[in-house]
Image 1 (cartoon, protein in one colour):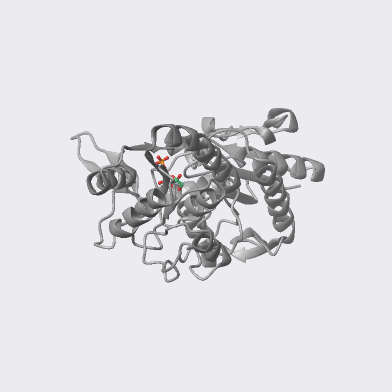
Image 2 (cartoon, rainbow, N blue to C red):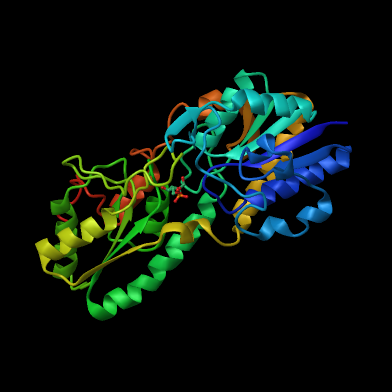
Length: 369
Ligand code: F6P
């Protein structure tokens, strides 16, 4: 009989609950106990934040968004900012306390569901001796060593749906609509939704964009009697001049900048340079919400069940991954080394260019188009 603890860390993603569902059921069938740590590592610090999970507690949750355990993307246990009595911020390391509590509570394994940040923390606990299995989550799809993360398909569907709706209003008003989507380091959401949603321009972090190229595409549309354009831009995209866009560091304990503002910038430049009516909108956290698509649900359930199999096989400090349609274990250390970028030689990039989408750079084939 084993005692497993599961946690969800970082930004939420549709499919988290499906992983929890699969872990609870797969463990229950083996006669193992499952506990959930609320809000990332809070349960390891305070017993009241550690909850027992039985099949009845997870009934039906596989189809719901968010996470029943709560999540956080601040407060790395290895460098946690706390305010002392004098009001000063001090950075403390609570990882030893978490290790002690993990052992005291008698856990055999921690299943950590997270993106690069949470998996990096999980790996550091593994180095301290905690048996850890990782499950890859992020709507950005930017984790290495797995073909897909759950949450991405749902986010792309939401963004594509939004683009479909924008076409009619853009056309009615002969406007340029600029849509900012998520994608901190990689342009997966922008590229997939932009191609599927009929965008004229897609701007991604992997290709610094030139406003002249963007405006040329909009002018091309006019010449071809198409008097509206749709521009999709990933929040992490930057200009050829090296400008990127953020809103500062945000809440205490966050390690990442809050990105945002590139859509408004692009819209402003288009308006100034083309004199066209231009509007921008930010899809933001809409992309993280809602029910997971069938693809994400199935992927998340498969990840959860595969994670429990890895516990049985004692393959720790590994993450379950999807490679060529099958579940495989990969070292967490390999998954967190770098962010998975869009391959600029891939057929998706070629498809975008082939169907006339501007990617913000000089299109080698534009001549004669
Ligand atoms: O990592 C996923 C993500 O959705 C990023 O694309 C985005 O920059 C970030 O989370 C925003 O997170 P939050 O607003 O929760 O801090």
